[in-house]
Amino acid sequence: MTQTQTPITGGRFLTTTLEADDVFIREELSEEQRLFGRTAAEFMQREVLPVVDQLYKHDWELTRRLMKKASELDLLRLEIPPAYGGLGLDLISAAYVGEQIAIDPSFGGSLGAHTSIGTLPLVYFGTQEQKQRYLPRLASGELIGAYALTEPQSGSDALAARTTATLSADGRHYALNGQKMWITNGQFADLFTIFAKVDGEQFTAFLVERTMGVVSGRDEIKLGLDGSSTTALMLDDVKVPVENLLGAIGQGHKVAFNVLNFGRVKLGARNMSGVKLALDRSVKYAKERRQFGRPIAEFGLIKEKLAGMAVRAFVGDAMSYRALGDVDRAVESAGRNDGARVMRTIEGFAVECSINKIWTSEALGWAVDQAVQLFGGNGYSREFPVERMYRDARITRIYEGTNEINRLLIPARLQKQSPALFNAEAARDALADRPSPLPRGPLAAERDFVVRAKRVAVALLGQATDSYGDDWKEAQEVQAQIADVVTEVYAIESAIARAEKMTTRGDGRASLAADAARVYADEAASRIAAAVRQVATALTARGVDSAYGPSVQRLAIHCGVDAIMLRRRIADAVIETGKHPF
Image (cartoon, rainbow, N blue to C red):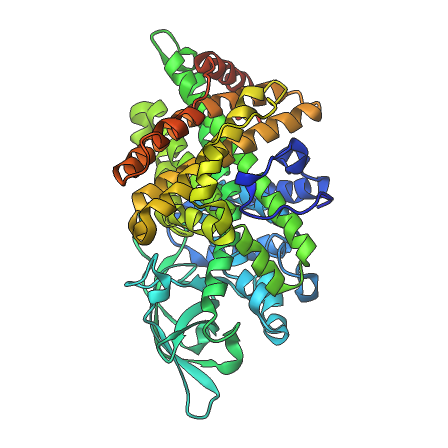
């Protein structure tokens, strides 16, 4: 990665102005990054896709062999430091490879669980001795990694875990007792990052080898991801040497939540892989399927679906690579080999990580739903590929933290990072009339709306926290509405910046990109207005001045565009190219 811009501080996008030059866009991928992507794509086409039916039959030895082959192509080594057999590459490279691997979500889930949550806790929290012992073997595929946080009684409330770790009388090992649930690679992993409470109280991470006594349950019968192993783990007096303590006693939450942030920020690219695949399969089918004497691709409502998928693919890529670029620059500035500083850095981007997780997973869910609808009755049949896509996509709104939990994290994290920016005084200031120069350029109206929508988000969050006071923690519906406004602001701004940067780069698709940004801003403005109305009404009911609602709603007004015409133009480009156009 060769970015030289000043690092951006996470969570500050609501109160700063973003210029197109400030963001990394997918079109700027280096030749080295593209080479890794091509290697991953060819590996999937040649090695994985021809045998996916065997993976769906739970042939885990085949999964292990494929992982070993992936390692021979360096695909397991990307984020492991060179000193331990890895390549030490950046997040963008890892995410771009993940995007290619995600063409099959089952195998993509197996490999992703190994390289991300199965390996990164050790990379960032392990001692030198632990890294020397395990990382080269994880890089080579000799060991397969897994991550065990969730329990039957503790899902979103991870810190309520009941698994215990008791130090032996001689002080040489911990005895782990308890059960874990929904563990990816659970049937065949060799090394687990397991979270337990020391003395039943202090939440702590451990590196646990299967041979220490970990027992896997049967593979779960799931809605989707049939080709990945998901099991429970039984821990019955599993003796873990004290040197396998990962991080400090009582600091397991730092391991758990920061590693999840890394997963969330990379998940966006994987989800967009699914959106693009849904679009590619849909346009191919729509051009071949004839009804009323013509291809259904010629009908307006079919074009609307194709355009909707293309717009979401464009916006989702803009968001994902913006966040990846920002985090990469910040990590580079902090020192990529300083685990503690890297963790503090990624924690600072928790808002962006949650935004990307929510938005891209819901965009994927929408896209595969539209694909099934476009295929009609065939879409409901297992003989056609979109049926599996529909089932596989559903989990993305649940794992890596449910979208509900991530929505609650957004306002909470914004307030924690910048309490002075989100209070009643800040809310009043955001609503105050103040002249500002109108943006220029083809997307000037959309940029002006983003400026005002940021003021709306500040006004809502500041006033809501003040009005609810001690009841704020229980006002989850209001928090979620505000989180959605914040998310839409980030999405629109990312799309605008990508389109503008494509223009300055002379990209031949820049005009179409601007169309996509306009369409998305138009759609998002309606959702922002609806959320503003609900929150303003709730605040007025709590005694906020009756003028507050109209004031904040005026800021949220966006002059519309001919979205129908723009969608048709985008759909025509999709139909002409036969695939996603960006």
